[in-house]
Image (cartoon, helix red, strand yellow):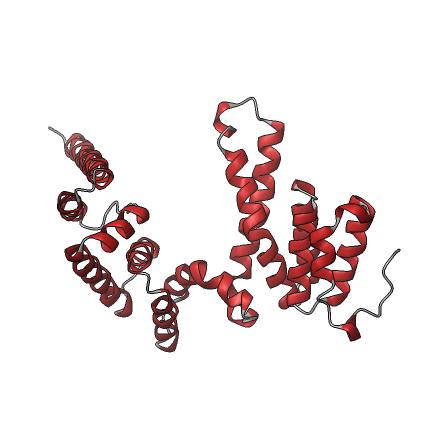
Length: 286
């Protein structure tokens, strides 16, 4: 047998072993979920133990809801999930983390409802000059809170990531409209719509807060092209006001009046009234 043939056979066997492992893990997870539905928390926790032993952190796809239910209703689960979280945390703080490991840690931490720990670990990593590839996954969970607290500069290096994500969502939304008859795009519609409406306004605010006005304008136009309702206009005006981008807030408000009519702007009017009086002297179209 040639070395080349041997290597192909070895690669195929290795790949099959991975597939078998993933299939077994999926079966264990499905069984654990069924046990939780039956409120057999002890059995479900045994299932999760087996799952971790099977995967060795390779294909960790925790059902966050199941973990939260276990922690809430079964004392031994709280102890074990905290141990799992802490074990992964030590790896992260040692600078040996990747995106998958951070996702695992976050899922376990969410089950423990220790939200403040997420930011605390982020700052510890940053102070230790951790690589951006380790920090960026944390920011994917923290960024909305940083935007809410106007910590825009903390996100400056990652605007490309958030901006890219929302612009890709616009493109995928267009693909779904133009190619909706192709089955491969059927599942993108709701997902992209929800993502655009969810992350669009805070991404718009971040761009404004960092002075990237052209990008912010492009994002706002993209969001409004997907949906131009009172609710969406209100979310964009609110984002602009929070970023203290008063000129952009006035422009959006004027556009909303032109698009919706004065009788269909209940939420937008409510938000616009929160503008500081000394900033609202600019003329707004009647």
